[in-house]
Length: 110
Image 1: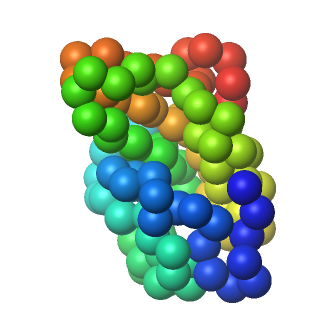
Image 2: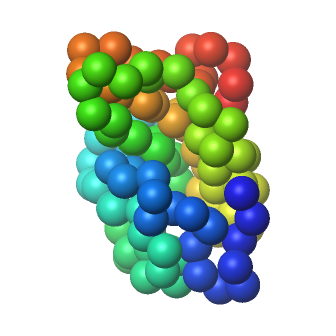
């Protein structure tokens, strides 16, 4: 997934249910920012909330697999690169589908 200038990741609107969770120093959820096409608005919110660690939370409908798809992996890599200059780090990308969950960090993908 590439980035379009100062806007967000391509095709992100097709990946509904994406939020950035701002974590405290102990990695507990503190705030939630919906990930949207307008990357500048997302960055403004992240900077205002002063978070250093973030987790990407992705919700899928029940009955679908929680395993990452190629687009999920590309999004995670792109997001991690885009956060570095802001002095923010991606702690995890969690995919939730019904009762099943997948953690990029636990799987060694982050």
